[in-house]
Amino acid sequence: MVLGTRTSTLLFASALALAAALPAPDFLSTYKGTPYHDSRYLGGAQKIPGRVQCAYYDLGGEGVAYHDTTPKNEGSGGLNPADGSYLNEFRMNEAVDTSYTKFHDAIDNNPYSIIMPEENQLYVGWTQPGEWFNMTVDVARAGTYSADLLYTSNRGGAISIDVNGVDTSGPIAIISTFNAADPVAWRQWHHWNIMKSMASLKLAKGKNVLTVHILTEGNMNLAYFEFKPS
Image (cartoon, rainbow, N blue to C red; front, side, top):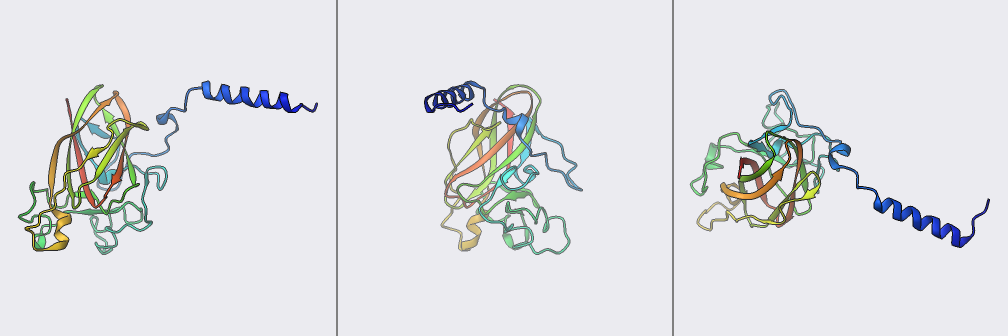
């Protein structure tokens, strides 16, 4: 049977209306990423309350667990030469740029850090606007949680945090850690600080996926979020 143009148009419009009326696919049921694990970190969703490590972003690759603007890891296997060591080769075949704090030559234990980080603290760095990464977490109790962030930021800028695919935080202004008193130019990327209660997120009990978006400026090193009940 050949349908007339008017009939075809009405059927098409009805199909669009039906599709619009259906609920959007649930993020958690369609998400293909999985919690990170390796020989040292046995895996499983990171716990909240607790410390959620950015470098333990999910497995799943580009477009699923993260988006990075360059295919090469600028830290592991790049700045940190591939020498067989765990820290230098950490996730070196993935595009998200990762490194760790170093205490030789006053790199990350320099006197211009506001907060002294732990030595060998992993972090996500070389960040650029438009990049993002996912972290699967396991929340002990439903509620509102505040997050402290250990970070550096040469230029300030902004990030945001999605919860299960929904922007929950809105833009979060990141305080610059630039210090003109430091005579070593490259060390501006290594002035560590903690932003207290930089975000407040409402989280359901059990599995949640947090997406960290770099909105403006970039040039941030993001180490971890420390989540506590508000």
